[in-house]
Length: 190
Image 1 (cartoon, rainbow, N blue to C red):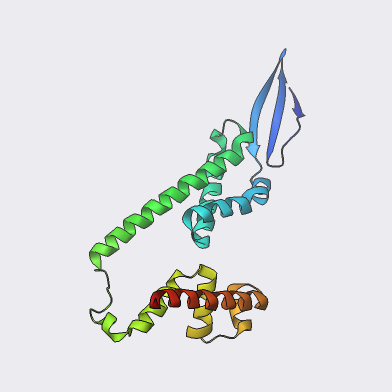
Image 2: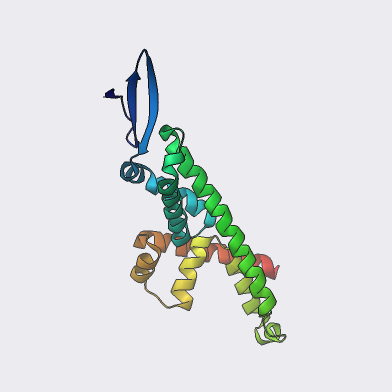
């Protein structure tokens, strides 16, 4: 029996065996190391969009690759390994989100919601309430800059490092946020 190697994709090897007068394609095992190297990052990005948490996304992808490792003997077409991984990532993400919702539902039953004190509105002056409402309306990055600057007392350099942006970005976002806040507060007063 003669074994010939056909052209292979980076993640899959295929064996061709000649038997008698016909040629039979026999699925070979998936080269998991190549598949992982080629597709791990894109799968983590996909999972991150689905579960919105990097650590959980990495776990989801690891579980998907582990599932492929366990079931590669039953994989009919090794060329479909990337599709298998993608589908496994989506399914694992859905399962993770279901478990998360179930856990949160049980926690709500076990621990009642913690609401702000009944007199919280009285403790803050109307002006402070307007400022807080205006800050909540800001775009996320602008809100982060202001919170880090005025509530946490960080310098521009510390804010830039915490947010992973340049100091120029911190300055421009702070400037835009202050202008937007001024507009919001003027609208509230009129």
